[in-house]
Image 1 (cartoon, rainbow, N blue to C red):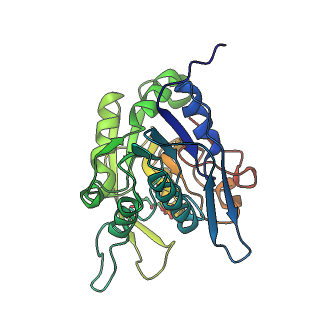
Image 2 (image 1 turned 135 degrees about the vertical axis):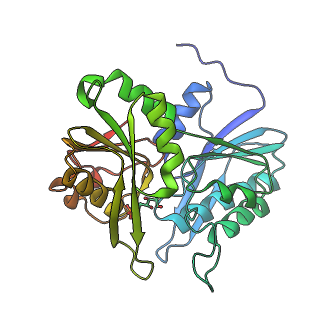
Length: 298
Ligand code: R5P
């Protein structure tokens, strides 16, 4: 295959999602520009680039997955040095944006973390961002730069459509695991001509992974339930929603989520859970030790 390099464009990858950066580079017929990221024993990070970037349009790919703070710092250092070396424009592709759940003070006295993240990105020199399924659209207001906000919804819809045998031809119901996901789940249900249900979720704000799923509204009895969420962190939301669906008579409970954060150190709790299969995008590179039988990349 002949490689046609785009003129005046360079692509750098942070360390968090190199496989996605490679796919993007290949789609753009670019090579990933050389760089070096060193993490010291105390966790501090140092970035170095060695290409000439003067007047270039630079694409930076970095997911803010775990270790989120360190990956954010790495991204900001890339932007800072690119700006110092006079890059013409810096586009950051951030498939997973951390801290987006803290888009407001949920209780008096809390900090609004995503506002800080947006200002770090701006201050470090990033000109524009590409984001994917940010937890809450309100968070976009903190970005004082152009943002292209993409959704994985269409990809999930295509996937289900082309695997109808697995998901059930006409007894599919899309389930929002909390009211915050109602609109997205309703849209997916309408694209797939499927039923729709929503669950009331109560998260105990003083504990991180305790969920009460109270009332399920909609019909899941004798149906294939597909829970649709933006992200999986501990898995508490999804597992509890799947239990609720099965208590209400669903045959199976599947989970679609854009971001597989998987914040627990091991994923054994999924194996015996009420969730039958889990589908995530590649916005976050999932390490081998966190992969488990039920998990698939779409
Ligand atoms: C919350 O509102 C989000 O949409 C997700 O449902 C949540 O962050 C998932 O977290 P966990 O897997 O820890 O329940």
